[in-house]
Length: 99
Image 1: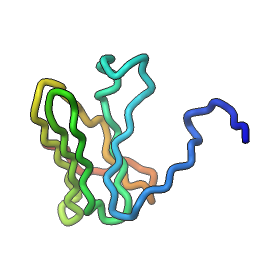
Image 2: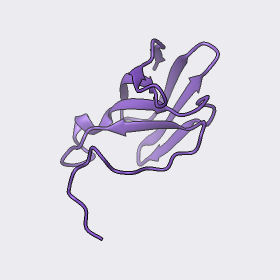
Image 3: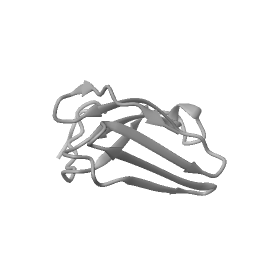
């Protein structure tokens, strides 16, 4: 099977309730652009995203009751969330992030 090299249309199966961070395409993970995240919320967002990095941990959660996202970081690498969006609405959430 062959497919065009377009990164905008990659099929991804996501479990309902998932919190999925997406980053821009960068030359390497050392590029700061790879740590600027857009977070998509599927379903109620009750399943947090956790990442172990070589220097620490990242935990991204969503509170459906208050429509608020939360980012907890331990270690040297710093991630930022530029937007939170409900995947089923494809519009940016009015919720806020707490780092």
